[in-house]
Amino acid sequence: MHTRRTDVASVTAWVDDATMAPSMHNAQPWKFRYVPAFDVLHLRMDTTRSMPRTDPTRRGMHISCGAALFNLRVAVAHSGWSTDVRLLPDPDDPTLLATVVFAECDVSDALSSLYPAIDRRRSSREPFTDEPVPEALLDGLKGAARSEGAAMSVLGDWQVDSVIDVVREAEQDETLSPDIREEITRWTGSGNGVSDGIPAYAFGPRHHGGRAPVRDFAVGRKVPDRRSADFEQTPCLAVLGTSEDNPRGWLLGGQALERVLLQSTLDGLSTSLNSQALERPELRWLLRDPHSPSTSAFPQMLLRLGYGPAVPPTPRRAVSDVLDVDRGASSP
Image 1 (cartoon, rainbow, N blue to C red):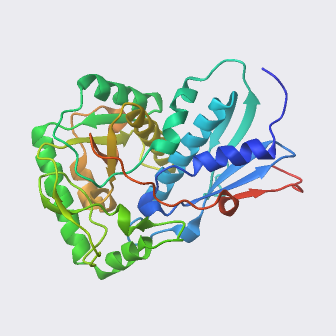
Image 2 (tube, rainbow, N blue to C red; image 1 turned 180 degrees about the vertical axis):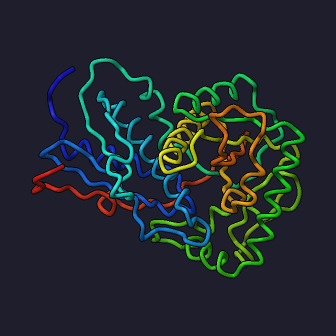
């Protein structure tokens, strides 16, 4: 282990990779602050990007920031450094989600193998084929979740039917709530030049047939030239869960989620995330598998896995908008 310190350019590049993480409605609710004097990076939740109607506890914001934290760890490992991460270091400051200290490392970190997937990972709302995902790949994804202290359960046929019913109920609730529709509209359907939110080109086609649960962010709006399509009849669905349902558990869940997504990308899989039912507490618990291990007792995300077409990336905020460098700090 060497004592050489990192530098602003390296940290900036790592944060840039971190921002490629998925986030609820692509709100990108993270802020970083680097203190060169102490060689420490702070990850904060940007509360100006909160969604009080659909994410009142900020569970989704924590998961999003956890995913960004995992990308950061991968990018750092790829550069030959290691990270010492402290989650929620200040009980009096709940927006401070993590502090990260860097150390140069001679030994290659297993995380670095995931680095090529950071830029390639996408959230797809396109139809997948009905080609089954091999059990070996699913077992590998379960292992990826376990390595981050979470668990992923692949749903059987009867569980898929139940989950589809729950998602449809969430869709109906959403349709009947003008406040929720207004909040979703704020973050979706953006045009060119916007650096956040889900643009209309990423909505995917209208659901014409099939059983795959895919969220329709149009929420009743007309999208020019939008096509309709049949989705898969036998979707491969998985629920990622954690043993804790609190800010720490949500951050761990976000890191596990991103590890699963990056590994899926390297495995050649398309992935789709659905938090719709999880945004409703009374529906969220219906996704809980009573036979699942304690590590997945609290469901955090519904994933759809399969083989689908390539999709374009969604916009990202400039790293200068999310990273502050504090050169005059007297304390970390």
